[in-house]
Length: 599
Image 1 (cartoon, rainbow, N blue to C red):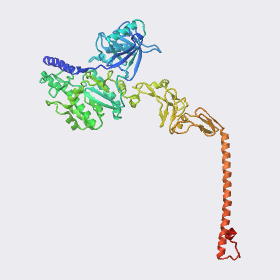
Image 2: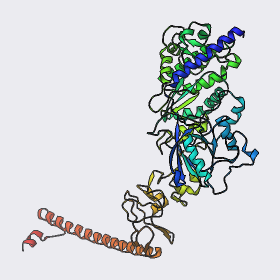
Image 3: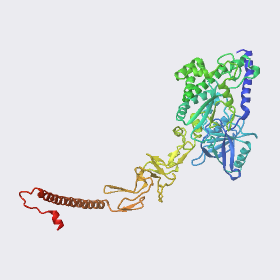
Image 4: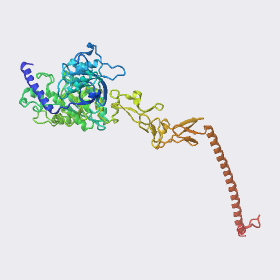
């Protein structure tokens, strides 16, 4: 590139960045989490802290720890190990939160050095009185990118006055215990989470573009599960800005913008004379927006994830495949209507507003609890900007924090997200080891103790120490099953015993959940029932059956006698009647029963 080209680029690029910054400076909100000092009493209370835009904040959870202010390397810019300092907690002790001062090096480097020395979290104290800001990672620093990708602990910026209070308390020999709380960092009003990702199709913008593309590929599976299950509503967005009016007719502005300077992006290589131009990026961003809109019309919005990941793999800038021809091949392979996408994109050369891109510029302005979008990439969950590492596990935690507790889908309960508290002492909840039934349920926030439903049978109780069936005054040592079929689960929590090969149970399949001793037994039905032995019951039933058989035989014999006498009587009646009309040769006279009755 010649000196003239480079000088023009040097002049125009700052203008473009300035316009972008000015358009976004309207309302920048810092995402905060609550920091509560538990001791000492002199500084006990709640304080604000700004979430760092790297590492892994514990969205939906909290973390308690003890604050330590190192004697040396107080800005954390050097390796703590070089000074023989370790922040690893002793067994049984609270995790260590390291307090460091702002200045002299990147925020991320301070956190990285503290993490390597064993810190569980880092608090950075501001060195001047000012509103809290978001600690971000360096834009273009390959060396920094290597350690930023490996930061796994949370961090937060605190204001100068609070930092001084912590230092004073520590200097007086007090033990300072604090609790970092992210539970309200993401609203969780209902059973569906709305989230959006501000992204970019440019794959040559350095460390952040590499991180973004890696995230899109890693998170795609989880995104599809959430979207296809109806658990989330996802919307992609793309940042653009306008060219200064004085430069709209310049060669540089024309190469970086669409629609006569209305929608621009920086030159991918920052070299206006070679490679791809900013307008190529804006055009592909527009295409990806229209892919989402057309896919959404077919009720398959998740196809956007397929398109952007396939486009990144099949159409990279490095291989000179980034553009319309390759993009259309990807669109056709996914079965999308190309004509609808082209219609959505409109005319990029028209001296008029593009409805799709104009809507994106308006969406960049903050609304409600969400500030203006100024950092790329940016994730917004339930209208709150996410702060932290753009990594599958960390983002999953943030999205899952947006669900109302106990309504989160199964994807929120995998090993990357759930806390697995039920693995340790059953989470302090009730359990029946014999029936392998537990009230402990893991969530991404922690565990909850709720009596479960097993094989369609609802257990009733508090889920912690003991539960009782409905309408009973007995307190049982377990969550009691209730409803039809409850006797199949641990005998419904009722008494049961096997005597001489015969099983007796006080459980009755009914909705009232009562335990009733069987016939011949007396007791509460829960812990014990006393009665005759099984053999006595057998003999008793045998006697009953014998009596019934005898009575049956007697009844049968009586019936036969009665039947015989009735037949004899009927015969005599018939013979008497017939004799009156045609006397029998063998009988001269037959007495009349009628006459006898009248006598």
